[in-house]
Image (cartoon, rainbow, N blue to C red; front, top):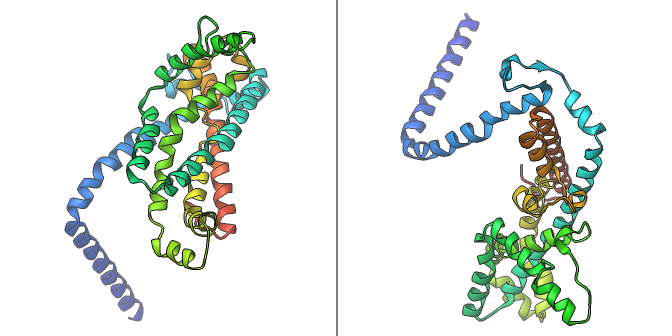
Length: 318
């Protein structure tokens, strides 16, 4: 009898929870309706295409299709690791990723801090607008501008070198200059746009903290060190963790446009290698395995960085 009463009580409890859930759903139906397009977008364009990564474990043939192609396990990954291209691509990608992390990640923070110190609002807004504009220029145009500046045939930089008594340098066909050119273009195009989040974080700092610091006799540098930087520390750490998730993403479009036969040894990265191998040469499974390896490294870096951030007492991203 006791068991029957307990089962009946549990059933009633479940019915009450279900009824409450339905009431909440009906009450917030318009909010859920607005959420629907976003959910459908992620399902259709982010999650369903994930099934395509399974061809990394197949000897995929477009004629046999996904269901008809033979399964080969990790053979494509082993072939990629044994390939001579793996060392070149991995080295180039890591070097460019480190350059991005060292030069590109801190620069928006520095510029945001400098803009935050400006007291003339009109001047501040003018500089912000000026540094945002390059973000809206396509990589095709940016690379075209770089060609005009650095070409040995009448390029501005080479003309200047000659006028100063130097020799022309073929920047565009050189293994030594491909990486500085790539990083320079990224800094010019994206630094201004990258300041937005840090400026938003700086706008949330309580002005009373600056007032209290000034009363205590703190200089501008001391206010920056003891008030401003601690206020944006969590934002910087979260963005750094997210950045590590894309650590091996060097940017396909820009590098593909910059590559040629003379600088490929120093400029070939995972993104361009996957395109060349998969789309141009038709090695779909092999290219998918290479790209899947890159994604796996990104996941490991995000999980590791998030774990270290939490160990250091920060919030992390999950």
